[in-house]
Length: 126
Image 1 (cartoon, helix red, strand yellow):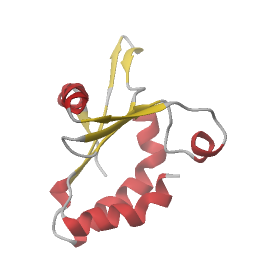
Image 2 (cartoon, helix red, strand yellow):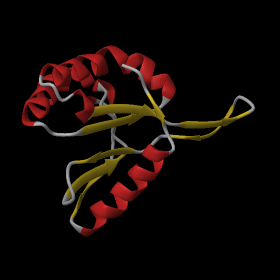
Image 3 (tube, helix red, strand yellow):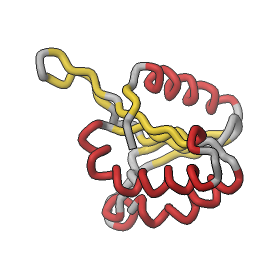
């Protein structure tokens, strides 16, 4: 379903909007073709550094002890989404999902959480 959003990401690239995409390692492999297409749109505008992708998972002895499950979209310092819904057709069309739009003060808290996870994640090569 992320592929349906590629035209919107092209628009973001043309507008010079920074995008940081964070996912789990096992999801990255499935998403890599679409993420590559989005990165190419940024590359065509000369702003490839404005699109970054990372993966997050912490393992000890091969056992996953911390993974990424939250779904967040942080638009700017004034608006964010957090919820259970994923950018998958089934999640958007069939599942009962719950999400919240967060405005103003709460956005900073979500951004801090995202930044903490981002800082402890691994760069994904597209």
